[in-house]
Image 1 (cartoon, rainbow, N blue to C red):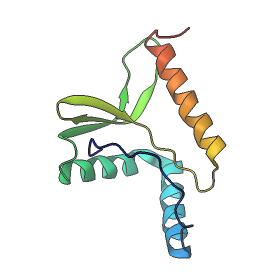
Image 2: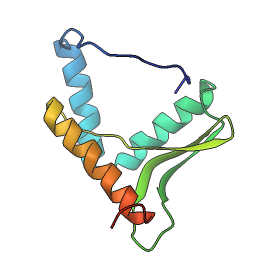
Image 3: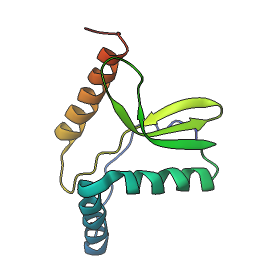
Length: 113
């Protein structure tokens, strides 16, 4: 979100017990209503100055209905953010999630059929 390239990332150390417990609590909340967490993330991004504004669950605005978890405006440009609330996952599952989301968006805007 800072606008700087991340470059190639390396895997970090595994999270400790307290981190896992805290995230599991957030994932539990997300299963019932991820809008609460998405709103908190959006408010944090605005407060930190990384974005000017945000909306939660913003529709893409096409015949196919897809909503973004967060729609933010950064440097005057719109950015859609999707959050993957999973307590356990792997690289392949993350890649599949991202590619599915990209495919859905591409279909919705008519980029692919």
